[in-house]
Image 1 (cartoon, rainbow, N blue to C red):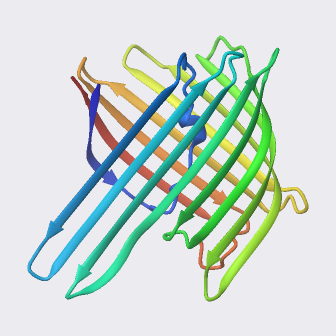
Image 2: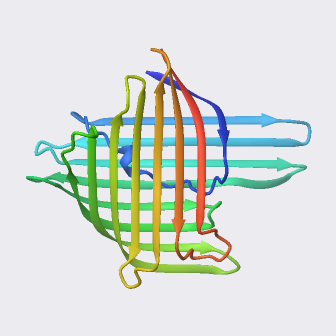
Image 3: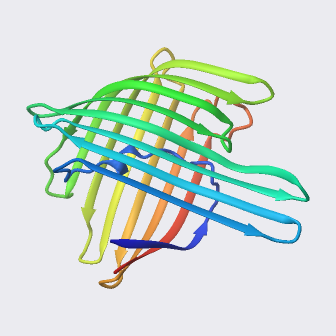
Length: 252
């Protein structure tokens, strides 16, 4: 059991908010698990009220044939009211489900996702796809996996007018974990997604975490998120984003 305290965050851009499915995997799943986490914060001043809630629901099911299903529901909502005028500052979340069937030398995956994010002007993002996941043997890293797949993606954006986008994309990723020393650990995942009908419409994403085991009770995490979108759906959205955060975890 642990409690996580965020000491400081340096946000060069908080636009990323990308869903890192690789980080949600449980490679050591040996039974059915269910967990719920809800956090709420309310602050009141004479003429200003702040309200924030974050929640996460996760369900893992392991079947007798060693296939598994993962369902994750995650959301963040915050608003500020000043002189009776309400402003929604953050409203984002996603529902992700994934079914994995282990085969001889690879895994077959089917997945679906629903997402919204007011900061990125995403009213709705739905995707449905399937792919193959492989494990590579390497003496240089502890775990090395890569995947290839196809997905249908429907997006609705809130710009000067409502903009809709439908596409079929190739989705590919590579992820690795390595113990750098007795105190340092690194985990990184890179994604490449491109439109089948127009390969010049592509996204590159990377999520990297360096973890330092400072003491038996304290871990320090350095998180780097980056994204490049060759052709954003909205002109108001930048092509490149970067996010950096530092946190500390106390184990007791």
